[in-house]
Length: 197
Image (tube, rainbow, N blue to C red; front, side):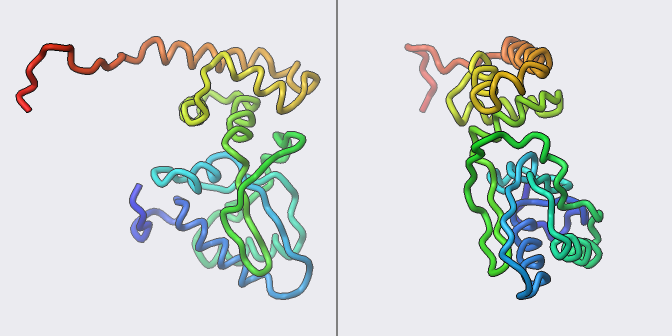
């Protein structure tokens, strides 16, 4: 994905565009009320981490005060975005003790993303087939393999919360294992072969 999103559709949100929109929200909030802290997860967290990613909305982990909802609506209308471009739909996936890293610090609002390990645990807990590629990338960045997923989710959410999700998580692990089994392994040049370099 290009670092310039000048020619992207209105609803495609790159990391750079998200930071600009966060700045607009900060300005729109005005000086009234306490500072707001928002933690982002899902595709937007990955778009803010990885330059080649984009998303269509920003899933967060907490409900918003009325003044933030009003600012979100104003920024959405100004930029041709869906009214729910910034939402709290992921609040059901919030683990205890969530750790995050800041990605935007404004005067009135700050945004942080869940750490990679928590993002991985949350995506594995959600166990959506569409997240398998993201789970694999996050596993690679953490030097983990599929056998580490269920223990990570249990450690993050606790056994009681995971019990109902265990079968779905097992299906994700199985899908990852199948993908890895079907991926051709690249081998480097064999010793003694003249590459003509």
